[in-house]
Length: 300
Image 1: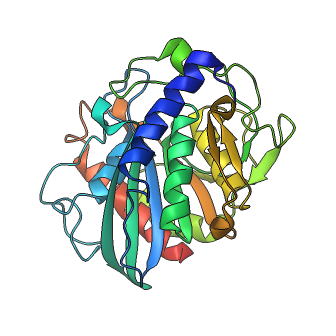
Image 2: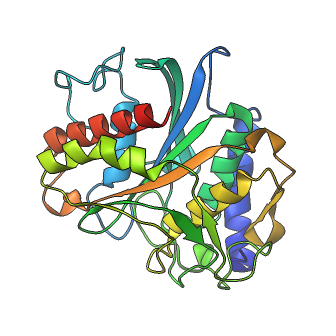
């Protein structure tokens, strides 16, 4: 996607800072376990906290989520809000090894700025080095929880946001409709996870929270923001093909190690509208964290 001269430079500069700091990726693995990457987002549009970032950040916190990844009990501390700082340069990543029903699993928990092309570029860099078998992406959606089936090669004319939730304007605004020039505008790429298995795993938690859960069969035209940007690039990366972002300012060579990567995106509802802070929403966030981990287990 072309973000204009200033926008392309902005995304490329923050991406370069991350790559310089973590040339082999910030995600860490033991080398012998199965690997899963779980992603969320930071602040945007004046929200108090992003439920996606809060769930992912809380899962990465050993004082919130027990070392063995048990589903019972209650956290020792309040949920984290998941917000990023400017010095994070677009992402914060925490690696943890958790005992799951399928055995020990190495997790990479990543939070991204709500920023066009930057979030997908950082994700691709981490994926090619971490090499997970499952990419479980999470975003803040509408009033219900939604299991997405695909992503479209299209973008809405709406700016991205800085870590503090302030709009970036021309520093992060699509200059065209298509996300990737590899495909005609509007092309759908499927997300490869088993939506049926995931839906069965999530359903009891969502019923307990009185949250409607919907599983889609195709990409939603209304899902055209940065969640879709991340999903489309992830689905493309799973083909192993080269990646060209930010008007060519960011380029990644072929990624054959990602062929067969299981990809999926889950939208969680806007619970921040009901709570003043993530800390106040701790019981709900804990249940959603349990749901996510149970969903991961169902896909391994």
